[in-house]
Amino acid sequence: MKRLNQRELLIEVARLYYYQHLTQEQVGEALGISRQKVSRLLNRAYEEGIVQIKIAESFSPLSKMEEELCQKFGLKEVKIARLFAQEEYLATKRIAQEAAYFLVNKLEPYTTLGVAYGKTLYEMTNFLTRRLIPGLRVIQIMGGYGKLKGEVMSIELAQRIADAFEGDVVFLLAPAFCRDAKTKKAIEGEERIRRVLELAKRVDIALVGIGGIDPTSTLMDTGDIQEEEKEELLHHGVVGNICGNFYNHLGEPVPSRADERRIGITIADLKKIPQVVGVAGGEKKFPAILGALRGKLITTLITDELTAEKLLKEE
Image 1 (cartoon, rainbow, N blue to C red):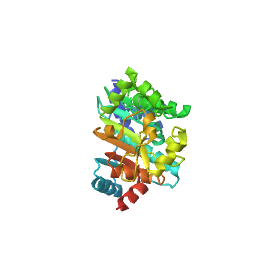
Image 2: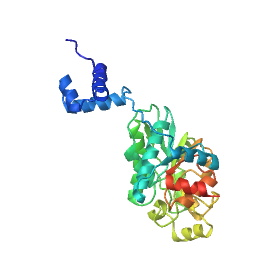
Image 3: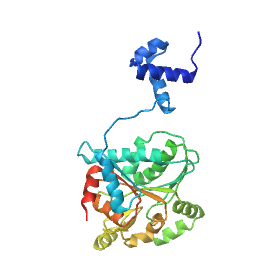
Image 4: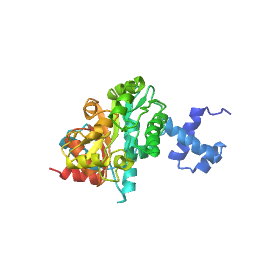
């Protein structure tokens, strides 16, 4: 009797399971293999495109909202995560999952991807599905935030994205905010740092978090921003930051003394990048998200449906 080659076996397992509706145990019994092997073969059949899943669904109301947000704010793309619970941490996970799906389908061979730090971006890495993207290069576009945990996670975020797609990673081994302007000048004077910052300015896609300025926001929680700097920022009407660059409710950059210590790309640099993907949602982040959209600091938004609804109501 002729033995099935590997591809024929994958097709037959899929046919018995999906067309004839046999259980995995029944498929294994019919083919003389274990149920565990049937499960592995079904996964492989999906990965190799033998099994393709199509979900029959009516037109999603989110699609209309995505189009409306694109038109209202002049965005290239909008992706909205549907919420099935009100808890903030669950909303973050849904946005992160939507961002992961977007990234997996957006990246092409030889793309250079710039990555900043953010809690939602870090959460996103838990939902990335592994896929080979030849020539992918992931570049850290801002230094690491304060506190050991922040510095480690900044580096690990870029590494985890690169690992998921079997790409290379270029680290910016510097703090996001130095102790003072003199230290910043010395660090930026190092050839390796200078080269990484130049690469960061020329990425094809930048993936960034949108931060607020409340005490619980990632940047404010690190202790990198000094008390007098916080007072200065609040006095000048700052509502948010991207890569440590502060801006007001119109998305206009707000210079501060913190800029004299910051290592990373600027808002002017961001505006030259072809696609800047902002990933954020939730009530606390709303002023920062709205400001970023008004100032056209991002070209793509990934958020949750409650935030999207509120954005559409803004004048």
